[in-house]
Image 1 (cartoon, rainbow, N blue to C red):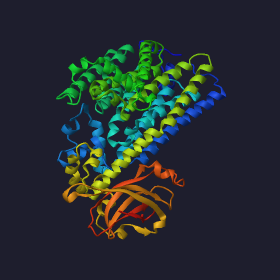
Image 2: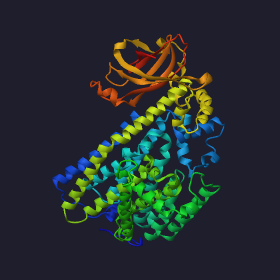
Image 3: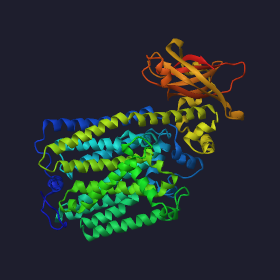
Length: 600
């Protein structure tokens, strides 16, 4: 094994041999002559990782809505107010405690190029996670020297950690591109740092080595201006540079870049009103610790279970133990282990600063699914470090036992996946019901609050969205209200569908008053839930409905149905007393078909 102590003069290698030299420098003997069982387990774990990626794709598809959610309305409101979105003042403007410069560029791209239908944002989130996975896989091979059984096992674990359905909010909410970017940039920054560390020093390489340093700094800047926790990278990089005994100019570069970045970040900064004050935080250190423990332990329990504190404390203990071993990893040039410990500290620091800002909102807030991206990744890094440790010795039993444990965790995760997938599905359904209210023109304030806490904000930007055909108004159905039903759909026999209306209530007020209708519907022709609902009065389209709510009691008496997600909710404009409202199921065909199934 090659040691790179002090980063002084090392063995010369040419550019072609650089990658293999780095691999040897950071590697240790791993699982020589693995057993057939161990090899099969590695393929099973790798398959589990790919299945997790597939579940994430499935989750995105079944919960899709083109309507913005919560903070996702920010660029729409700004554009409607005449703000120049590409101006530095708006890009750098504080959003809660964050400076979302890079995520805002993604939001602007979706708004200007893709009608803000969220597809670009959701696809970007998925691609960012894939890139992060590929970076980790590359690090395993180049920095860790992992091959064969160990690499397959590690890659499967990393795939599970990055695409775990428990973080469902980050996959179905386009605005959450800001949550996936910091992790990618952090990994890229640590890779740049370590490439600079292990790169051989020779005359021909000296002029190119600075590129790794610049990669690390630029990636840290990207993380800083993607989410507030990105600022944690600067002290981590500076301390790591000192431990790695990098050249003085490199250490100074990290120090200067971090100082300037932090100064710019906090220029004109104001503490968000919803955050706990520093004075109150000093009075509740126990609650901060409990919040951090719950944050880190939440992936191991069902939601809102306080036993997460136990798992969080275990995770904290393991992280502290590994932090103490950090000098040993540096001394023995275990480059990938160094990268994982730095990532652990980044995740741990994220949990801590989140606690400082959110602890006053209650401890249960630590279970938010969007935080799982850092909590699960924290445990993923622990698992990868444990995998490396289990394969260092001569024993063939230890790695086999650990593989079985990892596989059991993946199987357990698959068993629990139904819960976050159903939560994501309900989220998408409620957004789509909100869309039907907006398309129909019924101001159901309670329903609008699901998309944004202040419904008046949504109503204020609706004229701009209609004019520019953004989001739901880019869909052809947005122009079909008030038109003959037969001009938009091909009518089919009522035998092609079945369903029932379960409630009809008047909602809204004045000219925006209408009917809220709920029930269930089934596409008998294609043996699946209908695509949607269209309401008509005297043959003229007067409303819309979304399908996809969980109705297990309906399915219980109709065994021929293969899913319980058959409930619908929607809106129709109030008809004259003498007119009857007819409801039609929208069936999947080309062109779309309408199948009558009920009246109000």
